[in-house]
Image (cartoon, rainbow, N blue to C red; front, side, top):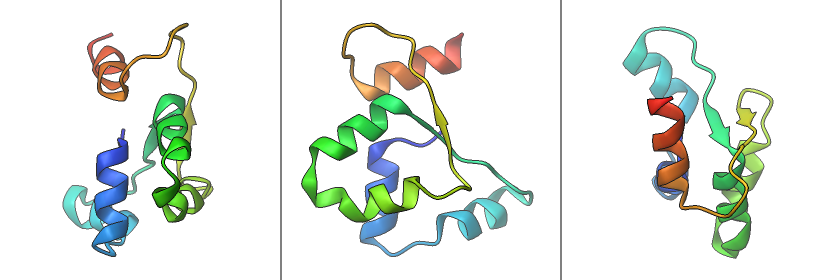
Length: 82
């Protein structure tokens, strides 16, 4: 699961995320992105290049069940501790 900070850092430093995941974990990885992370990125116009990447078929979007807007870190933490 990736957050907006990870995605923006990867773009800023021109990192190949998929290659990095494979090199680090030695296996195929399907990065998951919660909807609230996508919404956060859409609100910040400087991350247009990130939006192109997260629409890639290799990334999986996760539906967020929370009703009100929460911080993306809280959403990710809640998913991990479920």
